Amino acid sequence: MRTGYDLELVHLTKRYGDTLAVRDLNHVFHPGSYVCLLGPSGCGKSSTLRMIAGHETVSEGAIVLDGQDVSTLSPAQRGTAMMFQNYALFPHLNVRDNVAFSLRMKGVDKATRHAKANELLALVQMTAYADRLPAQLSGGQQQRVALARALITQPKVLLLDEPLSALDPFLRIQMRAELKRIQRELGIIFIHVTHGQDEALALADEVVVMNNAVIEQSGPPREVWGAPRTEFVARFMGGHNVITLEGGKVALRADDVKLAETAGTPGLPATVTSVEYQGATVALSARTAAGEEVFAILPEEGFFKTPKSPGDAVTLAWDEGRLHRLQA
Ligand code: ADP
Ligand code: MG
Image 1 (cartoon, rainbow, N blue to C red):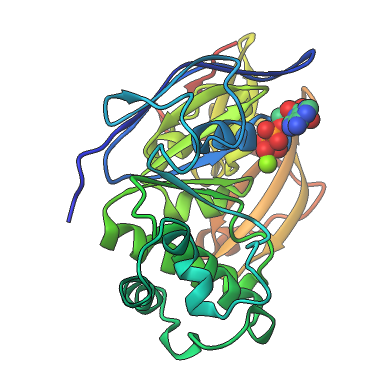
Image 2 (spheres, rainbow, N blue to C red):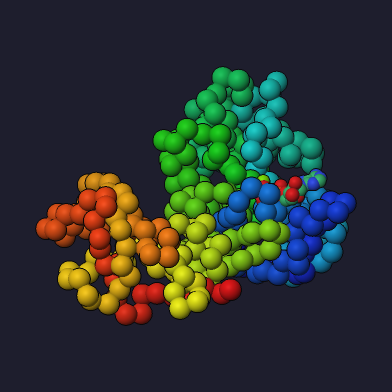
């Protein structure tokens, strides 16, 4: 099922005293999309999310959900729900009552709210744990309960602030697949804040990269990763070299770098600084005459036909059209 709501940020700004945490964001989140808000610590991700949720006031601008300006509504009125990083479950309530809590506050009768809670516990695969207390659950299980609890209000938008950061790497990968499945099933907008580019690439229909309180670039993950517009995005998303050529900066994917077969072919002369065997690929880095470090991901078969070692002179090359110029 797809729902038709979209969420728009209009000149959204947040100031804390003299700190400009979010500067003039303009963005449309499309119906049914999984959006990852990605950027380094302190760039304004949580402030943006908290303003959307209504847990933080808006300094300037507006938040428009489904055509309605919700900027001044209380969190419970605006049709959003937030899943907190620390889960914030009530320790004295069992899992089912934790999930049903907001319905109890609304005065929904017990049979109805338990039926609804059971439905959401099934969605997050926690039916078997309904009668347990939070302390009797693992971190991953508590998180599923927190997710069910946020979803019971039937939000149009679910907001998740670094939801996977407390989990160990194995659970993190399992849980991110679960989040994606649940978002697809519900068809609502998920806005998931993360500082991990892998997580954003794995999950998102749209990646929104923030830096210094502004959106640097947004788009489908392949577009943002494959065609970074700025040096910041190229470096932050990873997998690219930023090289100075003819006075300007260009981005070149590490897997687009080749070693020219013969000396004298066009390219960038460099000296190998390290070689790491990675199985299917070899990661090589080399320093150019200008002192820039360039990384190459080379198919292992080709590499071992003419293996290189640190100190060897090489010529770095690439196919026509694979460089792209970055905005200054
Ligand atoms: P992120 O989630 O991307 O790490 P935040 O939105 O938490 O970034 O913070 C953005 C900026 O706003 C930072 O400089 C941070 O120190 C500041 N900030 C966040 N919350 C507050 C607050 N409650 N009071 C004052 N400054 C804050
Ligand atoms: Mg944050």
